[in-house]
Amino acid sequence: DGLSPKLRSFLDGLRAIHTAGVAFNPSTVSGGSFDNPESAMKYQKSQDLFSTNFHPVVRIHPETGRKCLFVNSMFTTEIEGLSKAESKQILDFLFSQFGQPHISCRFRWQAGDVAMWDNRCLQHVAIGDNSSHKRIMRRVTLKGDAPV
Image 1 (cartoon, rainbow, N blue to C red):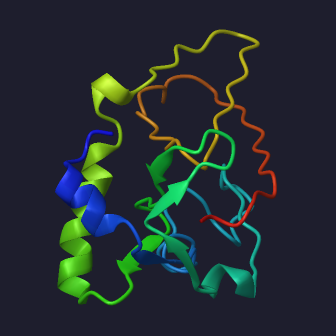
Image 2 (tube, rainbow, N blue to C red):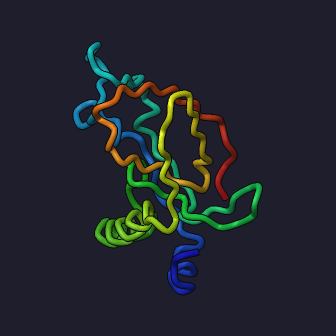
Image 3 (spheres, rainbow, N blue to C red):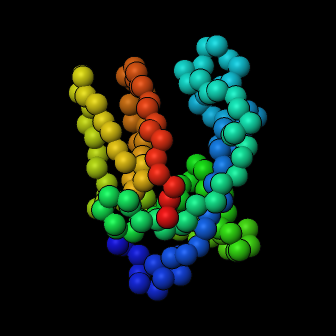
């Protein structure tokens, strides 16, 4: 909703390349480890990490019918049909839109809280201001639909 009509029109119909191979590459992963038993975060090695998938840059939410951006800085690496430089500039701009205060929910944790969000239309952007507290997290990812 916050993008200009011309930019929305340009993005509509584009496909982006998604892979976990960059974010979870054993040589570059930050905050976790594949082999370090002392690491707070554990990742499962899999060839699937290096697979490439194409998804629409703008998808339609299957329940609301609203259009939303379907890119993220962790997994979206390039826009199909654009040069790497063009992709980077456009994706960097789109990534900069996430986390703006007027479209954000700031969760203030209390003991026993549970938070859930719909990754089909929302972005989790951790603030990183809780380093003095122990964080216990259980992540569940549900198999979703194919983005259209």
